[in-house]
Length: 260
Image 1: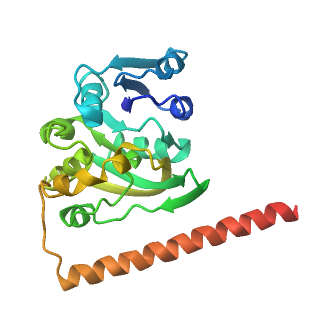
Image 2 (image 1 turned 30 degrees about the horizontal axis):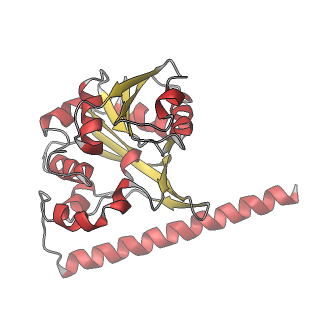
């Protein structure tokens, strides 16, 4: 079973879309919402859905403390967390679960996703990058965080989220420590699995002044060589061309629909 954890604090604006997108999944899952003290009707909305397990955050340990609490009180062999303003995409998310729960003994699977810039009503594709360890060792997250599923065993093995140390990038730190495991089995799946909302009032963008300090505390700090710079530029170009192809196909499909 897949345990999906959603941390929330005053997320009434988005929480129902989050719940409904997860409810559409045709896989064994539990959806755990960990509330940090909402006063805007979030709990009332979540309470309309009997399949949702609602937890109240025990201490002021921030978003990652809430996620960790949800994971500890969950029961699935596989874990992911999807923010309260994000949504899952049925086809891609189910494909990720099928892969990690299959016979290949995968520890971490990740995929593509979309940024949705809410102020511009615009979707932008975000492609996952292969070479997970390489990118993590160079302080680059090669995927959107919600577009990942990993095993409970590996989460426990590396100590989970260090929410006492990281309030903004505990997920990044967690994935870096996973990258240090030499026997970690990772798979990139080229499907779209989540929509990640980009908005100026999010926790991350409201605390950019604290970001630099947390980045200095990350586990891995590798020197960027000329070779790695070239590698990053090549990947940047590949992402650019993939994005252009995506928009070309989108425009072509739209023209075909109008012609019918």
